[in-house]
Amino acid sequence: MNPNTSGREPVAVLLAEEWAAIAALGAELDEAAWVTPTDLPGWTAKDCLSHMSGTELALLGTPAPEVAVDHLEHVTSPFAAAMETWVEARRATPGADVLAEFVDATQRRLAVFDAMDEEAWAKPGWSPVGEVPYRTFMEVRVFDCWMHDQDIRRAVGRPGNLESPAAALSLDRVGASLGFVVGKRAGAPEGATVVVEVTGPVARTFAIEVTDRARPTDTVPAEPTVRIVTDSEVLCALGGGRWDAEQATATGRVTVEGDLALGGRILAGMATTP
Image 1 (spheres, helix red, strand yellow):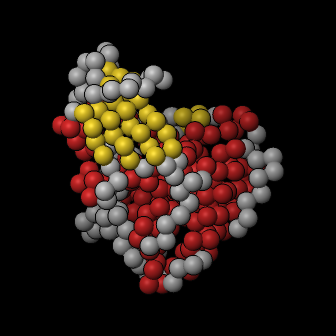
Image 2 (cartoon, helix red, strand yellow; image 1 turned 30 degrees about the vertical axis):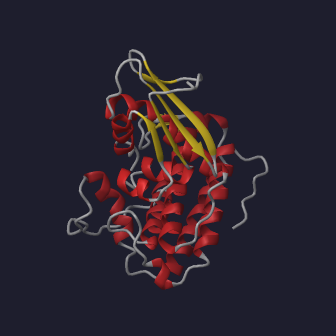
Image 3 (tube, rainbow, N blue to C red; image 1 turned 120 degrees about the horizontal axis):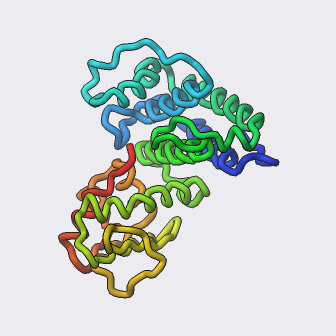
């Protein structure tokens, strides 16, 4: 699955690269690996792949399977139930067959992308984050696929793809939520400043200041109220709700300086994406 990037919309290039990375990882896995539990409740490595395939099949117009999911304890909302039908329908399907379906579905999606013009990419429509241009929706798809790529990799003990453009986009999406986390979730007081220093594999420095509300700032204070230092893998696992604060700090890859109570509330409130 070699992505042809010539003349493609940039976000389609990112998806092509990410899908190729997932396909290459999947080709290395046997059936025992496919049924390894992930950080997501109730989902195995294969279930993550089934979910990604199902989403792309739905976007191709394939009707959702008619299967019951109300017996599954980890399905706790109508949105989760809608996602779960594609997964449940494939639980008895061998991993290799789910992978073949994924490759076929994503190749067909790339063909759709290649037929789209600028008007189609800019057209607003439904997405999990609200009414946004189709291009923005596909950026969400990059994030979702990269996060599930990492879910699979952690489960089967095959780390990788942490320095890719998709990894950078995903980290920036998590970083964009920090104002909400600091202001609403953690309740940082007026005048507080927070710096989240991400050391790599994708390096970033995010700074938040609280004036009338918590907002990003280009000015990075030398002595912020709270400084959190971690790496991009841990921050994305926190932001994606894969790890809670206790799991993240147990890795030894998170340090908090300054107001430790506020720092703890920030880490506890990091999960902002499903």
